[in-house]
Image 1: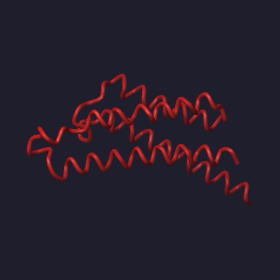
Image 2: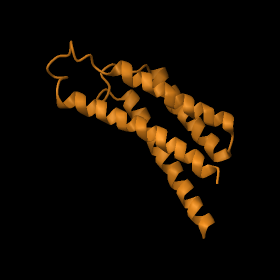
Image 3: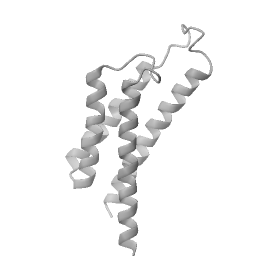
Image 4: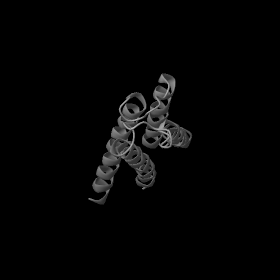
Length: 125
């Protein structure tokens, strides 16, 4: 019974991380979240690295998991450089839209870190 619960938790973690990969791809490509668009190559490479990390977790291959961590690390600069400069921002970027963009991307980053770490912990069982 404990083994079945562990497998269910692992499958839930895999599903959650897969949804986060789709969210990362959406954030990097959509013009509604980031002010400065990430390049198309970056928008493809970063989710691909995250997908390779997910496969590494499924197959228990540590080298592939490192690719996933690299994808998470490369996601942070895209968020930092794409945020608006509030000192020189127009009135359309001040207030709630900027707060929504920063909050959404910060929560997505935190969710990526936590879910990938939990995926590793649950897989080691």
